[in-house]
Image 1 (cartoon, helix red, strand yellow):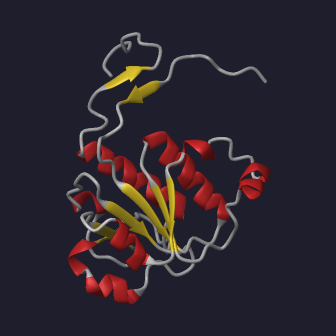
Image 2: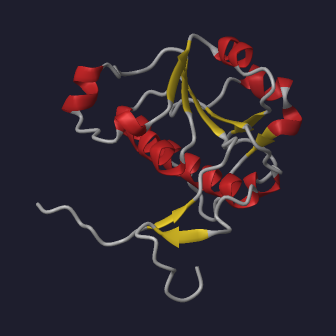
Length: 181
């Protein structure tokens, strides 16, 4: 299949982008989708704790993740190790059981956008320790929660919007955007 060479809409990466933090992700396809999002948005991806799958070179190649080399990836034993490595970044916690909308988060450069395991979310103790930093994505239907990768995408793009990263876009061939961009 020939590579599509049509221009793509781009924006400039932020000097201090938000960090995407997945705590003990269980489903490799979700993490693969989040990794692609991280590469597309120039947001570092941090995997915290025990993973429910392998991410060694052989496993990544077998999964066909041809963008993995574009991801700024870090692994941490636990959230305390992540905090030690990034002491100045705020933690923003995302949970289906939080009482405030992700739209109210007031994102700042370098924030850590923290998401929990697909099966149980973030630990209750962590949410209780930071009640002012817990946010949810409202749903209109009676589903329990959204898919992890979808949730991360929604939050990351809102953070990028609030931080001004999407205010100036261009086509990657250097041509001006047709119409409003």
